[in-house]
View (cartoon, rainbow, N blue to C red):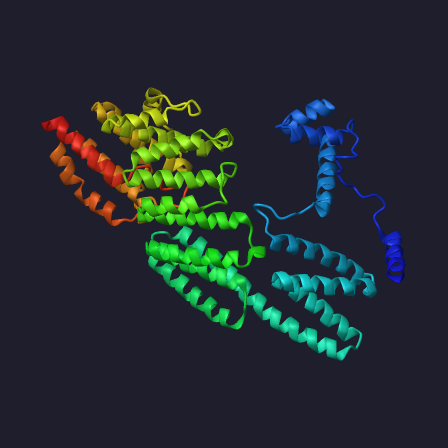
Length: 509
């Protein structure tokens, strides 16, 4: 009763007289707040102009509309304190516990500000236990420092020493964990900036991995081990050692599953997709298919299931399992959830269909055509061949894939004018000073096509003048991480050899 009396006294004296929340169950449906909320939620209003005109019959710049927007925003921000955060596909038990600890510590700080120690300290002790249970070092440190300060002010010497030692120990652990996060983040951004200099990035990664390895001997921290395994996996990918990549990913998945509270299902799925990416780079079709059959977490209602199917199809195409690729295509686009995919994903499947149609036409495999005819993708060969995608730097991967497929189709009927048009559309994607990064293989391919065009499609001259670029191409490993960047639906080496064979037949057949 004493704590309730103290709490009631504090609330009645200092609470905000009117709490502005957005409560859907009790809101006034005739209010302008409701109209604006519902209009945005249901996509009735796509612009401020539409909303202002419908609600007030005024311009979006008028004061009454701006006030309405500001007050609705404040109501929504206040409501953030009362969200029901629960574990799910993207939220782990750890993240829910972290959110609960943060919320409780906010309450504690308000209580301490008002000298309500009797209520605050038991809450801190409860939060400390939860932080220790879930390994939330940051919350553990904050609780330890609050208790250390409280016991110092109340002259409780033994408890002060206990929590001082705890705070000092946890502070060092928190420092190493934060440093390991920073190491991983720095490696990612450094690699993005200087992709052509893998050696220097690899050296930095090795330095950071050794530092974390030493810290792991001092602290039992799942986060440290996870960051260590991420860095070592990154190193193996830098050196194109995908067998080692698979070993490290297996170890990482085992580690995460042994600390199930700390990870969300989405994090496990990401590791599984990385494994399929490794099988793709190894061009190990049988092992990739065997592995994907063991994955029970992914199903067609999840976006990551479609990413898995993309890897499966690309692996089949790169290992000449063309009928199997068409079966994967058919099974994927037949799913009811396919229509809900983002347009960029649907476009990739259309491009996959175009390449499989090329395989059907060039190799006369009738079963491919039967499996890839599908009304859910509006694929018309004539439209696809003649539709040149406009140059766009952010669409580099998908546009090169489209133009390369168009060249293959034009080559089947030796339409040199169409091929020339495609090559000219490809040329802007070649940098003046190419770097040996993920885009380098496509630039080698474009350079070889350009040589063919300059030599007026003569076989021997084209083959001779493209030898240097071809040597560079085969010496450069593929570097694909999903999506459109560095997309090769068929290996450039395979496409180039098919092109040379067609030139030879055309000139000397």
